[in-house]
Image 1 (tube, rainbow, N blue to C red):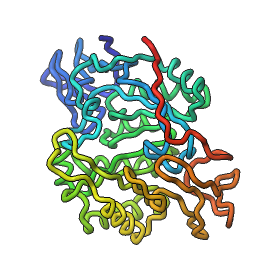
Image 2 (cartoon, helix red, strand yellow):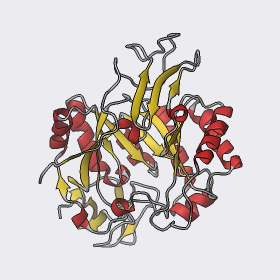
Image 3 (cartoon, rainbow, N blue to C red):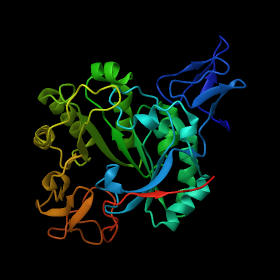
Length: 356
């Protein structure tokens, strides 16, 4: 197992070292690992144990991240590693993010090889996903550097539980991010995710106002836990006031998994109700996910109300933008990043074997 050096840590007076990548601030004795399991103390320093290793590489539609305003229809080369710095009881990727077995990391690639693979397969971007890139940030940043050198964008799919200094370094290299805003109460974050809401809100403000990174937000609605009208209203109102009404917000459906098998699947009606609340609070682009709903998946012009991007699941069904990313009917620009023509990847998922 290769240990890669890291920089976001410091020595403590009691002989331990503290990891400073996320708000957990894990304090480690020699040989100990942080809660994420992949950042560890070796030889009086914090190292990353998963640099260059992955649980697998796949080409996905960009809409699966989900990103609806970042080169729609394009393919994205996606990968994750192992471990996580949160403790979500409902984790939908628990076999990766909660893994304590490094033998799940069966694939490997250098940053340069990853960038070359993205070009070879015609991918517009590379996504750090499946588990949180915060915990493998050194690898993610090096991949992002290699990708930018060959004209490939990078996407972070993250819970946003990040410390300020590490966060600033990370987002200097990210072209887009989907931040998972898991709920809008500290109680939910504390009891259900073993973390805290406030640092996530700080990350959202930072990405939106202090970087050039394109931002979208996802909230997974869990019946009886974070789907009440009052909480949804407060969440949408905060996004509109603090980030801006044009930031896309995705409400997605929960399915029972990991340590939360006692909750039912999210009804489609809950997603549609959440969307109605967010639209009422002034958000301009509100989407529903993990269900097929063309109206809740499509994009409309904020100027004239015309549909400019039609979607059914991950498939594009209509394209009404001009070559500059503006509404073809009234000419109003759409928030986001767009190519002159839509991508045609569709809903395919293709495994890519990088080799060792």
